[in-house]
Image 1 (cartoon, rainbow, N blue to C red):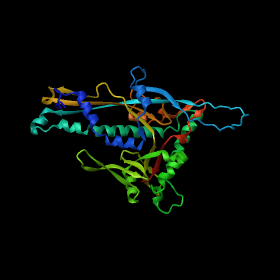
Image 2 (cartoon, rainbow, N blue to C red):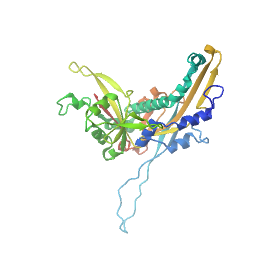
Image 3 (cartoon, helix red, strand yellow):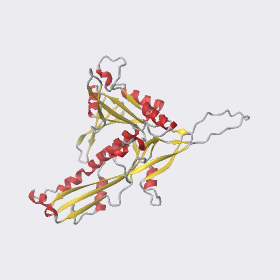
Image 4 (cartoon, rainbow, N blue to C red):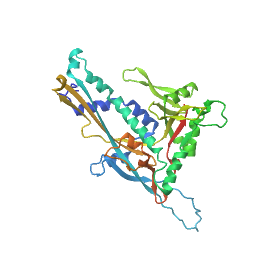
Length: 364
């Protein structure tokens, strides 16, 4: 590859180089099948003949149903019509740049600070994308008041059924441990959300406090990763009841006062996702990487600029774009419940049991 400086920087070669670096976290998410490539997104946002490049409504097909009728050679067949919904999907863009001065290179005997930036870009964008997904989930569980009439009722029913709150549990309570995650918590939460569809759940995202409680109960087993040089490294991932667990301290933590006897307590949100819960597609930027040279500032500086655009769909849920100021939603806008609603049609909202997304609220 060309040398890593502004004069000889080859953006296509650098992009190919970055694509060749194993994206361990995204690969693990896709192995869990909770985050999947969605061909509809690629067709909608990568196809240059399409006019909708930042937001679109695309078909979402309902499941067939109805009671089987008697085939006796006498009775007439009364067919049912399938329901086709419309789903709102969107793209978001993020950009960042990193600047290093020539003088830093001079006074350190030729240490290449930009090489250090290069080596960390993949990890950086992993964290950015994960924060976006967490903001989406927060917005989905804030949609109880979205809509009117039947759809508002359906949105609230989803939030209620897919929330398993043990933070104030008093049933058979002997110690505070009943307010913490335990051996039966995960299974109970996914059954409450999706009933006999609970086996679709494959991924858990939790705070390290929750993960520590699971460790103490010997319920969490950590995964390891072997790099290209054969070195084995611990991942900040494990498994709980056969589901992949990602540990992230950016998970929601709410401090709540529970009265004079209890004082302030911390309430931790754990998200559980099932197969295909999130559709995710890299739709690209015109210039994803470029180097900018400023010869006048501080004796000379190079800035590496990186841009990303991704398209997202959420199973059974539509992005409404009701409160979005620009062509790319901010994380705060994604957290706004007014931007989300269950997919609906003239016959009503999609059954919430079909949506493999749930959360646990606990004290740890």
